[in-house]
Length: 191
Ligand code: ADP
Image (cartoon, rainbow, N blue to C red; front, side):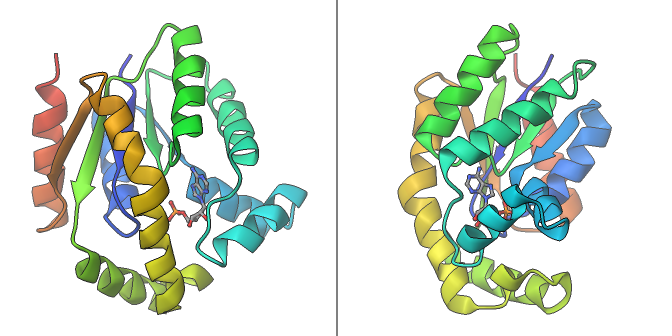
């Protein structure tokens, strides 16, 4: 079993690369952002709660996010492994994920971070916002808030897995194929 965390700031290309990696390595893709957007689209209580945080660029509370993630993992007993995209974003989320996967005797294999500079991220997200219909992608102040939250609350997760010897990073700039090649080379080289 191979369990990957695809890590990096908002707009770093996690979703794009995750879609390619799941095909290549035959994994199940779990994006907490996509799950929240699905719930929002269906106006569920979970979706309505998430919406109030997402619109402001804040994180949805850990209790809500962790519960949703566990449900999703439990729905895939057949999985040969997972790619976690946009999760974990806080230390409590990382601790909960480790506990869940250790219970399945399938710990995280590696965390891989896509490195992209702040100004490129802002431009990419504004570009995506023009067509994606995501309200959190249209407002530059919300985008900058998400980058701040990433730096303050999410980057500690990189160090958390670094202490386990599992954190890696690759450049997230270049063509989609170039970045995909960097990721597959790195992942195939893991012991
Ligand atoms: P991006 O990485 O481009 O910001 P995502 O789709 O991953 O996009 O996340 C969008 C929003 O969903 C976040 O700004 C946050 O409000 C919420 N969200 C997604 N994943 C999490 C998480 N693991 N914990 C808390 N909130 C989350």
